[in-house]
Length: 102
Image 1 (tube, rainbow, N blue to C red):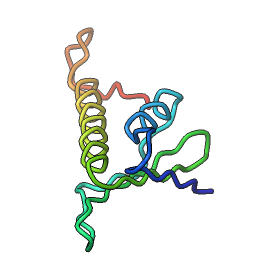
Image 2: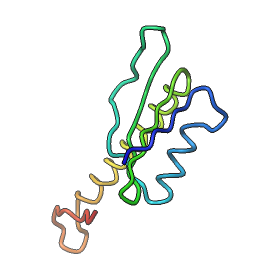
Image 3: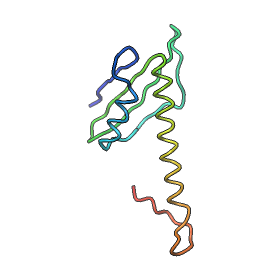
């Protein structure tokens, strides 16, 4: 089941919602690589987050779309960097090994 969470004109920032879900064990499962510009001129960005086999679709508009894009890309980049770091070396054997267990 997909739960829609729309933001852009509300008090609860989408970025806080995303961070809250990730802190509770959620994962970003789908994220666009760009912010879209709608016909009416508003920016639009959405991501899908999964937690406990539930899917959340976070949609944002305007400035919040740009903010959510920046935060989600930063989180994904950090995750990729950490994954690369774990694959680089094993000090004990001195070899390049994959130590990523997730």
